Length: 341
Image (cartoon, rainbow, N blue to C red; front, side):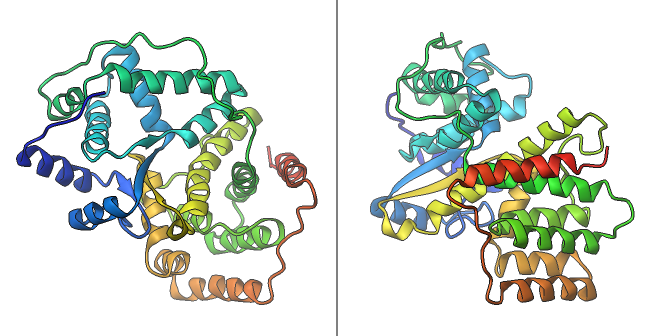
């Protein structure tokens, strides 16, 4: 892929639209999907900036290359916009988390590595200016790329389920049990969810934010797909999908909490409305506490925050033993069996 040569007007248009659509996030530099241009330019000279793609953006890019266009024109223009922004700033795109989701969902390391081969081919195949032309609407399709059918050779296991995903999968199963319980109020469900989490897992701020918004019916926040179904397989698939959304954030957080120590810094790209709302409220001042105070009444929030304060005092984290995955799989089994069908 060759270098991009853009005039000032194009550069300003790309930056303004990226911010308007809130497509790029970072807890320090883009907490609400908005960035200060001069700050990012300064940062670029201090660290290597990489862009993590969520699964939806990755699939859209893959399908766009495979078919030359997408049925959803808006999605197609947005993907081209993000590609333009990354390329014109020389920010490499890191597909690792999206590939991990592919490998674990398909239970195939080969499938994920074929997708990686397609990803690499896209960057070799298309001239950089193609993405700007597509983003601006100058063209309505791109040449179809002859995508590889053989896996990219790399010593990474994309099929193995990681601890972040397994923990979120277990808690989504417990959440579904609460959502299906018509007798409990929203605050009672929130209290139960927190009690269970403190007893069984490491606390995830993004998960607390998500559940608080979900239980209080905040706009754009949805429960795990098919959670009210009588088909257990559909419920499990819905919980897996939601667990992956949360896994993107928690996996990424292990990097950005320690990024001062490294020469790399990762930003996160997504156009998923629910994920955006979780990110914005997770990165807000006082984080989950502020979200709880905004979502619940003063009295209800008081009960929830009192429980958190109590649980945080002299907290002993659950013992996952020598084999954490075995612990998580057992927790998933128990929560699956306890679902009210």
